Amino acid sequence: MAPTPRRPAPGPLTASPANPRYFTVAGTDGPAVYLTGSHIWNNLHDGLGPGRSCVDPPERNDFPAYLDFLTAHAHNFIRLWRWENFRSQAAGGGFHLCMTPQPWPRTGLGHAVDGKPKFDLTRADEAFYSRLRERVAAAGAAGIYVAVMLFEGWGLHLSEGADRVEGHPFHAANNVNDIGIASIVDYQVLPLDPRVQALQEAYLRKVVDTVHDLPNVLYEVANESSGDPTDDEVGDSTGWQYQVIEFVRRYEHEMGYDRHPIGMTMQYPVPDQSKVNDPLFTGPADWVSPGFDDAIPPGQPPSPPPPDTRWHVDPPANDGTKVVIADTDHFAPGGGDALWAWKSFVRGHHPILMDFGIIDVVHPLDPALGVPPYEAFEPARYAMGDTRRYAERMGLVDMVPRGDLSSTGYALANPGVEYLVLALGGGPFRVMLAAGTYAVEWYDVTSRETVTAEPVTVEDGPVDFTPPAAPAVLYLRS
Image 1: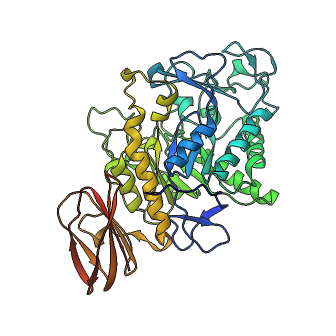
Image 2: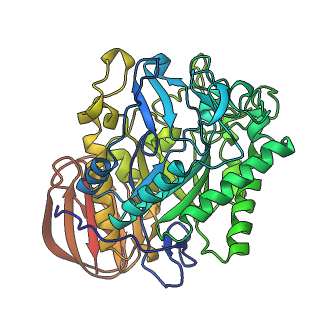
Image 3: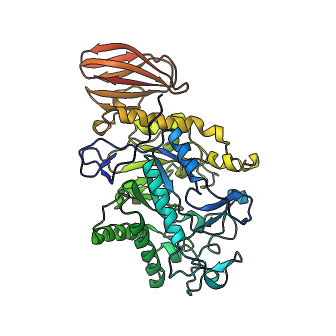
């Protein structure tokens, strides 16, 4: 397929009133904005590298090269990771995440747990906010929308090693302000210490002030914060996340800023995995990223999720309740292939990839970590870009998931106008078509080649098609 040219990302976005599975540019009547792309932990901060120990100077992220990588794959969306710990580990100590800069300057007397000066939480580190604005603006100029992550939960309660709280600026040993959270409960579960809440709100105002005028902005409350009211060690962040959403919206309104979509992503752990997504779909967020909600097989540890979760292998159709950004981070970390991207697309979602392969480019990974190399993710990366190209060719704002119209179970349709059908196998399949004449196009998911076929004219009813290759996508247009 032809490369997608770089164009600035228009905005701000709002959920389409005609088809709330998709965004549109606020104040317009279309078209749908479809989002897809690769992301990884260090696309905002420096300090990600192999091994458990931090290094000086911290490893730098080459953001211009990252943008080139995204546009080369026709991606137009990233989560911009807000990693709050200045010392932490992941993958059993295979990586260190010693993230810098942070929103507060390290100018205090005494030393934090990493031997560097303590944080002063009452002051803002302009280096952090300048970087935040510069990166969001640069992405927007390249046509890429950015979900600005406001907080991070996983590193506070599920990361490996002894630095879950000890490596956070709000831990008592790390700041000069007499703030001393002892667990994630003190930071992301209501009620908060009024001093902690005041510091969070000052930070939120500063973030919104920094990027409010950029059209490509979305917000995300927190990555994988907790959701278990029965566990005193992690608690339930739901009320706090709702409060953050309302605070950001209220502040935008008070300041006369454009409103930007704000999202809520999977909570973990939860007492009942089958209901993990309920607070997302019933809450006030504009967009959501669900987590695996399958029953956990006997003897299967709940984290990481099993590789065959339904959001990965057979995602449910989007019923139009929310814009759904389907992120492998929450149901198949280390997974994601071309079929996953296409299945998610034709079921009305926006697929994005937790792309560990990006790390492999800068820091060759030890195979013992079990993380796939860069090449393993290429089919998913290119498939995401190809779904975007189809999304921008079609009248997507008028299309809905209609698996009932195809024997394959995978179809997007505006009946009588356009149909996009995913065929997994090589044999014939059936599509229920409205009467008319349709141009016929086939896309080979594996080779990424497109071929046209003879138009088909049909009375109202079923038509059988046989794909020239498998898996394949059939595109019909009146």
